[in-house]
Length: 426
Image (tube, rainbow, N blue to C red; front, side):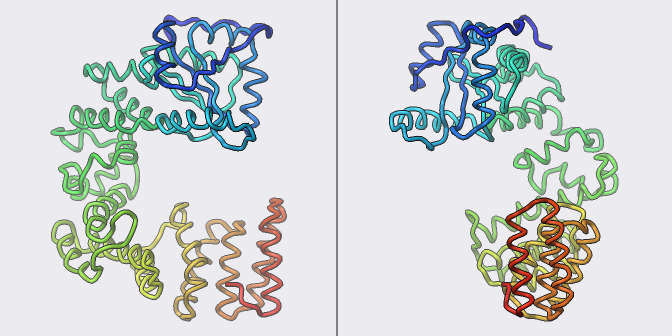
């Protein structure tokens, strides 16, 4: 509920928002304090259609202008450098870069509502009708709904469990990472630490694991409980496989990554992984340890571009532990690994036949995916099954044409011609 703020009715155009030319944080905050106003940023791009629509249909509206001009110092900043106006490029682009770095940017148009101290009150995106935009502005001013007001309540320990978690999620969405982490740590201390695990495990805390995994460690009491009580934990969380997925994640992050990866690169001696696998097996179990070691070897060898060893480890992983083909990420891993590595890096008939079987299983889940059909056709072709490969590739072409995907239609036509001529396609 928005309290104490009246959203005015939308009236006919007269005078819209008056955007100020200030391009300096200190000046802007000083002006806001002097005029007892808040600050509104409109971040736009020169090519953005919805941005132009906001200018024409919303910012020019008289009621929007009256409401915003009375309460905000409004700043309009171009965030892309696609302009011939050097002066604009030097002023707008530089300040926009500073502001978007501080508050985050996911798309255009983007709106920041900020107080006179430079603290983010609320962030929103996309085209909004005048009344919707005014509701957004009112929401940003309300201390019961904006980020600053809710943070003050959190700092005074005046928020309940649900409200505190939602604040942490909202802060993270608004790219306020430090504040989000501070709030979620308070949430963990107040509502998770020291509590019986079976009382706190439910689907409402799934976002805690998904968005703030950094506040947990593989050997935390709660994670240990989940490992020792997988079936019960899955039931409490109302998600089959939750426990195994969570444990695999933490074991990989807290054991394998520090030992063999640094700054996104492979490091250390992968030959020593056997010792670490034994340690994990002692602390968890042999299956968890083997899965973690196999995945680590896949990642390590791929980063080193040691494709023979990567493929050995990857096929071992898929054959031993499987990949959920109904999961989008699992399906993408299979398709991309076969297309980008198996197809280009090996002639091993065992690997080719296994890849064909994986793709056939994947296509049972989504038979109309022309990207998967293309991968399937390609691996068939490499395995010497030319005629079947061409038939599958033509099916992929028909589906791409139906979707009017001109770029892939061209690509698939070219691939079919190469197949028909017996030319390499990799």
